[in-house]
Image (cartoon, rainbow, N blue to C red; front, side, top):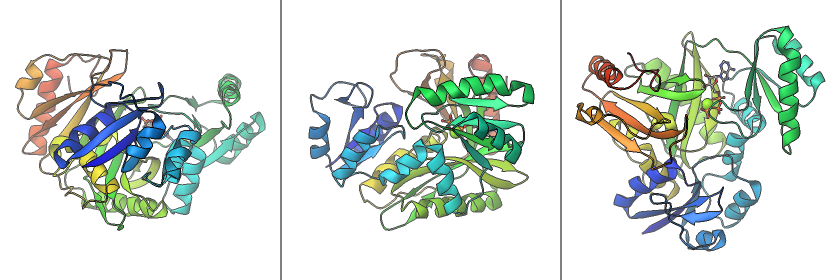
Length: 372
Ligand code: ATP
Ligand code: MG
């Protein structure tokens, strides 16, 4: 029996717990917000302090990158934390992330760091408009971002950014060139302590209002897959990475630019639960527990639809062939990631047909990425 402590007690820890059970891997979770150690499925408090949970764990890992330094350092000092805390820091601070991408020599959007109004002017001169402006710390699901399209918006955007910079320690803004991408894709893969790497099929991702809504495995684009795998290997090696890592890309004329990394299992990899030989959650646990990695081959065309702000879907969804609903057991809140639907089919064409059928069942206002 392996005991794994996960920092973060959300749906990713929950799905790790579900994937770990058949391997006799027991997952407990540390809720950074409440500072309770909880059961990742029931959220029941485990009456363990963090120190006790660290002592009881064989391995410690994380389901998100915005972890207070003190907690990360405490876990790292036990020698049990995987991946290396530097990977978590790179995922949580866009300044460190940009340095990492450049050191690994992978293409990414030109950028400029902004701490002051003069820096903003320098960014506009260096990169030009439009700019995408992102808080260096604490951003997720498109939060903490601004778009600066025209010069007359400079004052109002700067006022908001200045407030964001002042609101927390060590905060800054990373200004990026706006990339007119053809589409967004991501690559998820696992690397173990021996340096073995297995990557999944690329995923095409559709965002709505900054939040992922639909991910579809990209069947049969070997050139793009190879390009992504090469960039993945460069970043994973640079970090001496152990665990599952996700790279988000912009695709422009068949060329990939890395948008950002996530040092963890990733929303765009949820389809691997039904579409891959071994799901991303199991492979993350295998990697951090120093077990052989499982196969990552795509077993059938697959897609994932996020359920946002809804705590039920019509039963007709379950009646569709090869449709699986995964709920996270969370309280309903507008726009919140409440669960997801995985759908698979024998061919990409049949998968599109399945998505169309789902689009007829599910309301367009909550599932805008589906064909309606
Ligand atoms: P998430 O947590 O969902 O991955 P995030 O808050 O970490 O999101 P990003 O992934 O950096 O932020 O940006 C969110 C979305 O904004 C991207 O998926 C993309 O659609 C758009 N975006 C980000 N950077 C750029 C850019 N430089 N040019 C054009 N669009 C961008
Ligand atoms: Mg992103």
